[in-house]
Length: 232
Image (cartoon, rainbow, N blue to C red):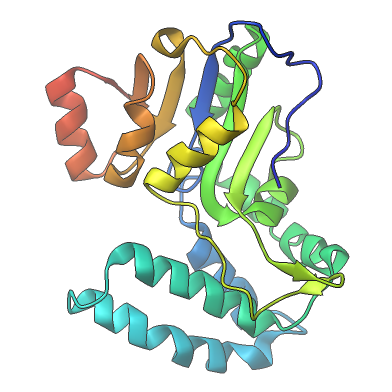
């Protein structure tokens, strides 16, 4: 679900600040946290073994360079949802909400400070991540995001629809969703900001005049140094 505040009106030239989640706003990887949550969950833990067996083939295939990373990640996200069975939106919110405190403990204080600074300057703040949208909404309720873009969980008749493939938001798909969310608005891209930690964030970082590499992986760090980008 895309969330945009009513206060941002069409026709106004505005700056944006785009934040990645895993490794950027949140210092760790949400999928590892989700795996642990399922493994030790008082209700859903019996499904962990089936889930683990199902993610092994794409994971091993990726390690053997037979399965692209993007495909492996998308398949893993799908398998995780399958392990949860059919859940209502309310049940999903409750399940992901149980992770809120643990995720907030892992927020990067420097990135939070930048987020608050941009909010005070009336910059349109976006969170764009491959994590489930429901999870992002649950753990960032106390932060001021104008737009939240994540991986949508298919629903049918009020329950999760595991027969409909998910559309994992990663790489160029992030750019597509950003442009879609900002359609009809005039953006000052040169004076806008983007924050990311890995090479997969490069296409988003290149959108703006002020890209910031946050604890970057070696490949992004090399690019950031070469192009003299700010590094946190």
